[in-house]
Length: 259
Image 1 (tube, rainbow, N blue to C red):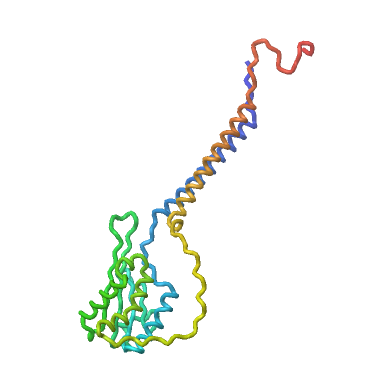
Image 2 (cartoon, rainbow, N blue to C red; image 1 turned 30 degrees about the horizontal axis):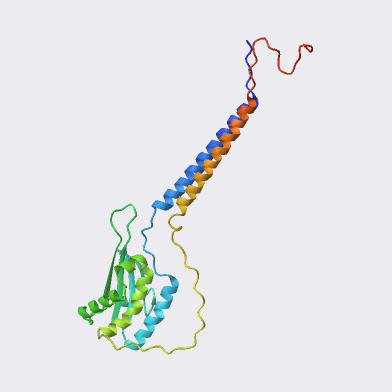
């Protein structure tokens, strides 16, 4: 009994199918890995104040020093790492470490971020420090003033850079309320340009979830590819089926006369 030889096209189709499956596997692994890396890796680094926040804070503190004779500054730490310091003397200059500031007040915010896999919550503390000639009770009064303005630990956790620089600009007012200095002079109003419209508010939804979105789209494309490949292979199988011939029957396409 003769054995039918395998069609070369069938072997080639199997090779193509294996190549498709390997490509699909690589796509799936890449998409899932991107989703896992992005979704589970939450940075615990405490961000420093933005450049414009620091640049806007320094002249305000410098004007307060000129009016009140007290140096003001900020310090942001991710203990024991110092993330940012600044004062009326400039960005990067701490008031407590410069001889030009014999009398000074500094707001210090210490932030600790924990990973999403940790059961511990993010933590922050806000303190007001000062030179030796400033009473501790007065510094505590300034601390309570920051809490009154909403510049507390929760604000620091949400946006450390903004909160600590904002707290620094509030120190001159609170120092005057605590009786540590006369009220700072109000700057003269000058002509100002019309404010430009604010940009559209962004959405933080995709910032932490883009990896999962990519993985989801990849899986949907994968499902569509499975269906397409399956339908194509089924059609090729149906086209390759030859109807069974009964025993003794003549091959299809030949008549008895031709035989």
